[in-house]
Image (tube, rainbow, N blue to C red; front, side, top):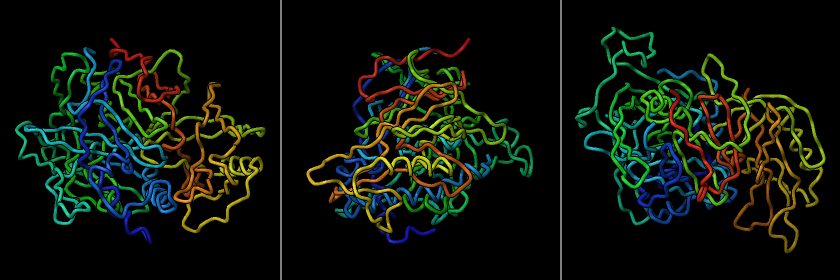
Length: 462
């Protein structure tokens, strides 16, 4: 599927790949690392790309919604394939823009000698994969900035790393039923339905480079199994995760599962989504005693971070609609099916005083409104989700303001086009979200992602 009129969208995701991640902010236990949004101002400023969708513009939100639609089907498709706290060697300081609707990225170092990759973080995927020994036309090898400087991207190769090992079909992590023999290389394929997007290759094992997140900053290297992505298709070649994807899912192949299994961190991690765009990920972070929580609904087949919502409140309107939804950091905007979508949208609309905006056909949102004269921000009803167990999840900012004119705003909610409900990044803004896989709960607490000193990063269970 093409990007349609958004020709600049083919390259705007590539600009983030070489942002320097030098400074560090240490906090708590576990380990974390820098994450950056693909539209963040620091990334755009350093690489100096022109022709990118302006942050907050109609084209910006349309491009992000379009990307969501292309990969949302992955939730319906099959995929083959404590001591001192730790952080990645490039540091744990994080940054994000103040807009909603983009992926987070992390700078990770792999192999011997080490290579750095800026990979997309995705709680909706399990496998960590990197571009590797690529077939012609199947990887993004370089990008060009506005000054026409060519920037080469790291491409992994098992033959160039002295610590690399090929995973065979008899490995417990292989999970393949179509191997020619037990000693054959273990193949993998991750496909995203409805978008002709996939990553295909073989599984390998190599060293992920970490350091202790303390004054000593002792080097800690741990073996990680990941995908050597020899063939990428679809939007992976058009800018989405061109330098790899970091799976944070529940399956044994995921990085959090591996770190817990190796005894490096408790089986939990936290993602922080600040209001100004700064973000953080911290492995081994179990949250705090005062966080709110709800249990996961773990399915045997393709488990995800699925939770149950029992009630929706929009201002003065309340409805006891019970449904399940997936918390997915790899989706920009929240998408819900009916009746939840219609209830939130119509209840929101009935309590807005501003005039309804005649929707631009490029806009992905159905409910938009003009700002009144001299009005800089909208007055909107509170939107709350009551989770299973009774704790309330308050939406800090369910709207987006459209630029450059900034004379109208939209309810940033999409109607799901597939048989699934997804809580995207925009509904996680202002929270530290804890994915506690030991207790099988989702936790959340208000956070600005800078000076959160209340996290309780427990060591692994005995």
